[in-house]
Length: 474
Image 1 (cartoon, rainbow, N blue to C red):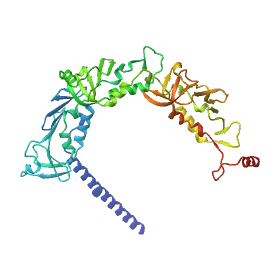
Image 2: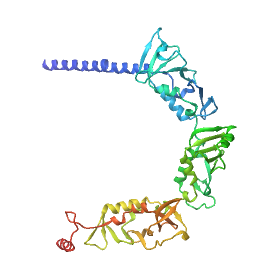
Image 3: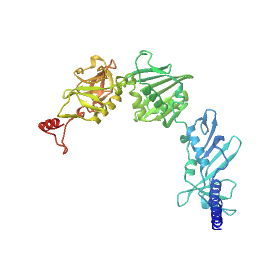
Image 4: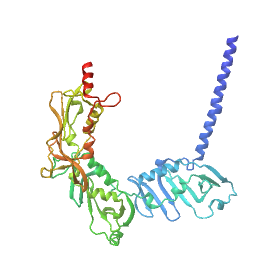
């Protein structure tokens, strides 16, 4: 009987729990979901079906249409739009929910919410001819939220301030600000003419080369980054368009361009002229789209310094260094020299030294730094001003053969790319050219920290006699 009673009580508990979950909890969850769906301002519209957006900011009406090639502005000008910006705007608009209903009914006093005068509006249209318009008042509530109404509905919604921001967009906000409007993957050749001369690189069999010196190793990642930077140049102001370009150039007193860009594509050629104005601003003229725009000064600084030398691969002298092959290392500088041998996983002095000891972490750090070093610049033999043959860092393999060797000079101050630097002349056995190594990079090797004097438990240097006694005791 007790078992039956217990089972019955358990069944009641289970039923009550199920009721609570499905009726109370799930019911409230469903109710919450329904309310959230009902609060969506622009309901039942899919972002990928929107093909027209119209923004009326009271100063001008902006009309945007989706084309196979992306979004275009058709009013008040004709130009390509910033497609990513428009897609982001559409998603934001369709996700927006009203915060509350300010008022509703047939007796609304529209003036209380700023709807007694012209207001900003946003209209979107879809491929299936769905059309939704919202009107946004200039008036805000005490929390700085906006008031919105949908024409034909007798209610005023309280919405986030983003509605007012979006309805206030200007042509500049939605316009394509790129000056290079092509696919980077279509670039076949880049020519840059600046104060340093003309640099030409071309894509041959998926590798960037210079036709005059096809065997000259170039920094493939660096070139791709340079092209990406050209692609990222954005106008910060549209200065002149179409027939107005020449007039604006004259007005700004822009003489000959300081930088000329020419990019050959699979489908044609793109050109741009870059000027440094007397007002210290930088301007770019793009003849193909008849534009004169203002761009960031950093673009001028970067492109004016481009040289073929600067596009060389500066990691090559160190590229083949493999720390896994290293079993011995030694270094000779004007101040110190030492030899180390690897025994298991521990580095020891060779020969053993009772006074000094190897800092294991410094050896590990040295090889990590070496693997990531890069030359600052390559130099010809006639430009070498100091002897680099007497100081060296050498790594040997298990067969006692030299795997890698870095020879270097004392440091000196020298101008590199028009900048005063402290450098060393250097060369490795893995690459034929002599190069400059920045002193700050050389110091990261930490050669002076690899070996240190032994200390006792109190951090004091051990006397030589004590060290001998310890050795004998062992």
